[in-house]
Amino acid sequence: MNPISFTASYKTSAVIQARRGDSFNPVQAYIVEIDKNNAEDLNSLHKVSRLWNKENSNLMSYMLADFIQDLDLKPDVNENHCLILTTQKDNFENIDPQKVLGAMLFSEENMENELNWLQVQPKYNSKFKPVSRRYKGVGTALVSYLKAKFTDKPIYVYSSNTAIDFYKKLGFNTYDDKYPCSMYYEA
Image: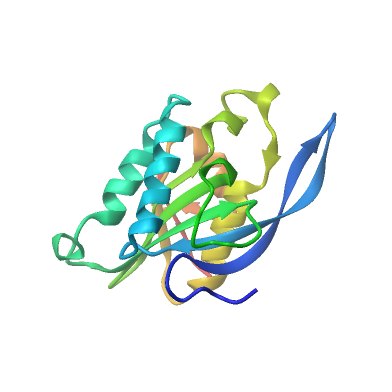
């Protein structure tokens, strides 16, 4: 699959797990980077945000606002990356919000990198609705892509309390015992 140069671009494929009856089986998913200079890409993110807000989650709205915010207001940020994980196989110039399983915003900064936002599609979030869990490995696939791609500087995240164990499993460490949510990963 070739990157599409004029809009959202394919980055890599990832294997996640999808529920089939009582068990989970591997399925192919795709990591795609959204271009904030492309109106159709932003429209797709707005649609995802509206869909996820119906699931009682407003994190995607904050992620979207941070993504489109002018970089002049963030002097330490060199570039923001908004990545989604989708089961959509192609035609990334028209992202189907129903097939987006996870999204993240990542900032390349002068001295470090920061994972600003990470959210799995709320209706599949096993932390709050374990019986409705339809996919496994969505957040892991997105964070693993970052860890493999951005190895030159540490990656910092200020985690929610419920996600500390998730990040620890992925090799992140707490850098201040007083604030266990303040975590970093160094290759």
